[in-house]
Length: 418
Ligand code: ADP
Image (cartoon, rainbow, N blue to C red; front, top):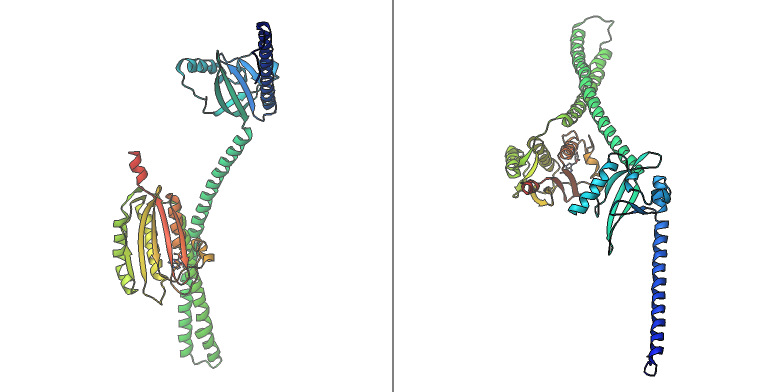
């Protein structure tokens, strides 16, 4: 502690003055330090920074903003900031500043948005602008942070273009599939017809041969051709034709899905599953299986198509049941966030992990000879749900069973909107 008791008044005053001087000096050093720091930040900032006063006069512009707009600081400082904007924003800016002063309602301050800037050479560019307000003792300042987003905008436009091209290509492809499957089916009908005709002709030749008495005809040899070779060939042709016909019909069904008009409405899933169960009662009984249906939440979807999805899932649960145990199929559902999620669980043969994605591919079947089917049901289900903002996925274990999950938009969003 300093001892001032022995000091005269004059000494005390002198001491006080020197103290005051040193405090002022410390303050000045601190202030200079702060200013230096601020300047360094402004000079090196990647973002453009411009400060204006209440009358929109530029007080400060950092090098990044000088570069962005192509002006030097001396050309901008003291000018109205609207010189950095193209028409009509230039003209509107004063009104905007005035409105803000009188109403206090900001449009950009504290929010930030995309605007258009104008360079010294007259060219314009999109930029992100964020403005903050600083209230000093005797005035208000506004600091704008600007960033050129030309590249981002270009990338966004490119992405939108690509999405549009993709949608068009997709449509084109669907049309090709549709036309191809449609047109390819008519020659098939001919092949099918003529192979039958051929079979009938063979029968006739055989009958004629049998009644012929000409010794030059080698009856056993011709008989072998007619009774084995030709029928075998014809049966292969016919099996091939039937297969191609089924595949084309599948393609056609699949491509029609993309064109089918859908009507999204509130779906009473309890009623829908009960009616599907009723229609399948005989099949379930014949399979010796049990079908249990829980209370299900409503959802939004196209009634016919959603019915098709669940019918297919239930049919699959019956088709791919494990002969080792009595079939048990359970349907349940719950609301999760904005979607109703339904589960069709079976205790069937299960699907190996490596096939759990592939079963959704068109015509993909794990064991084609074990059961009837064209490998299209799950592909169609996935397509239907995609178009209705839904999803389908699997959890399955070989030898234990499979759970198929279907999610569709729930009706709760609808209720909130009302
Ligand atoms: P399909 O039943 O006509 O073959 P899907 O597209 O409905 O066509 O099913 C594709 C394949 O997925 C089936 O061939 C079968 O191998 C497998 N699969 C579908 N559902 C089940 C299930 N519940 N349990 C086991 N495997 C299944």
